[in-house]
Image (cartoon, rainbow, N blue to C red; front, side):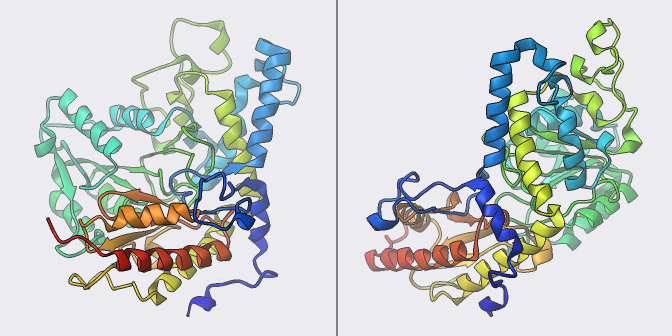
Length: 454
């Protein structure tokens, strides 16, 4: 079954794009349990859902801008020797972002960071009334989103414990059912001001039914926004056609912009004339921006929410990565390869003697299961593995064993390791080695034994 996902080298046309990235070696990742003869070979990096690898083009573009800074200084804003005037640097990125999220260029802005952008969007779109003031979200939303929603509510005099409808999976399940989300919207819609979910859930890797949820929210008169941190560059998006009101994202995961990379936001063109409540000069009409007029005149659409001039170094780092993605055929091409890579990983994991079904609650010995949806239409590249028995320290030992052998995933306490084969730079061989090493580590943990429940 697993072999059905694997492509022959001549069919794997996107595999060449691995050479566009810098893959750390085992030695650089401080792997201690690999033979010396392979210490300088590429490590098995399956952590692009947390931080994407460095694109060589990004490195080149950043180095070029450093040179321009050193040789042209302030003149780089309007007289750039390579044709990338800093005054308009974000415009180099906007066409790419529009393609990736399914929008027009005027509906996207390369700016800020995810949570800062989320606060801007909440200030613009969360308009509670006495009857309609609640926010519908997932109970295990990323903490930064929870903090943003809670502070937005308290600043308006609402108690988050009352105003937030936080959905949890059914008993014994790990992910939310679409039918339950839709029924909640239908039942509570008249009291809901805002529906705000992650496109892809950071912990489980579940890709929510964005089109259906957005339509249900709009049918009840709710505003609908999305946090696309784990979705952008990972799964196909059609924000304009789905009638999404707003979305925010970071770019350092599947868009490979670098640690703390510049963020982005989407505002549907229906809201192009929405008043900007936190105006900044970079959102002002570029034709008169440097005339320094006393009155703010917003750029029409998403870019009117810009506040300060974007970091040129961060923007060109993102630009280099987006150029690679575009050359590879964009999201349709990388999604096709992603389905195969993640399907291959899932199939190999299921062949392991340590694998059990998520429904098997009572197990003996050391085991693992996958809590990410099995349906490829409900997930992206990431698979989230839970290690059993839970709460007994299995996961940290497994993570340490993987890292010692140069297999790089990441963990979410108490029991989850996330592995994400990224289609632009991971290989089927990466997947094979990761599962082989995982089996070795689990065998060691099994032999050493697990302490009894405390």
